[in-house]
Length: 52
Image (cartoon, rainbow, N blue to C red):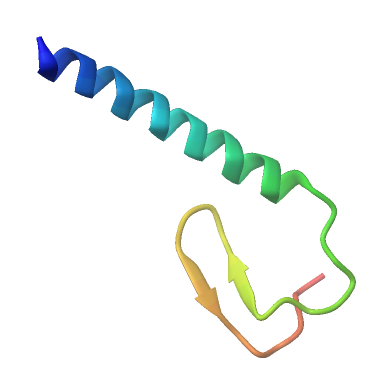
């Protein structure tokens, strides 16, 4: 069945995306204030410095 394979691939991709986002989140932030701030999934760009 193609649908089962698609669902399993989609689930794997979703898990990988969440894992990658968690890795990026847990990584030490760069000293310079970032242009875009990502909180979990929604990303918004803000010129203000990153909150401590």
